[in-house]
Length: 165
Image 1 (cartoon, rainbow, N blue to C red):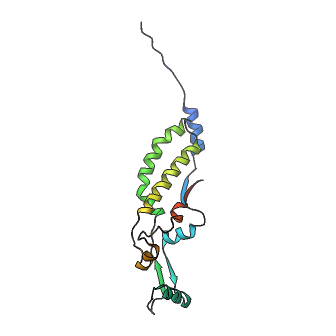
Image 2 (spheres, rainbow, N blue to C red):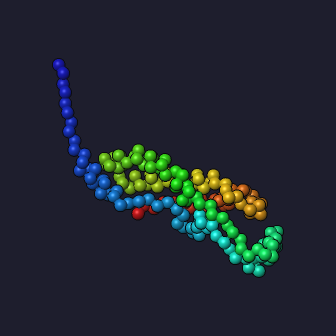
Image 3 (cartoon, one colour):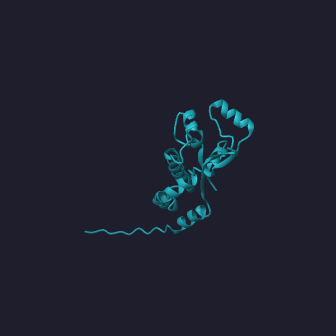
């Protein structure tokens, strides 16, 4: 004796509901707190005008600027944009692997976006920790005790977070 059966479940209403909740939302990764100013300096670089007061301070610290030096340049060390660009395919693959859980209601949309945010945050943190160029000025490396241009106290990298919009 042989028994056969067929289960017919219409998952389309669940998928439509999930798609509606997901549609238009996005995950932003960045430094949003008090370390945002420092992240901006590293992300885009900056030029700082040398004042007499600054020149004297730096001289007292052992950095002797030439009289002709009018600006100190902190080079761009993009870690947010470049970290995302380097990892976007991997992030997309991982998000795609779990998307069906959100669509079929096996994971709520909030959990899905949290997972994607944590993946992006982790990839960008790793990229920032591994970044080595452009190198710090030797004076900066000596003062920090490290040549890693984005790590001093670790506060900035530890401030990388995500938001769901």
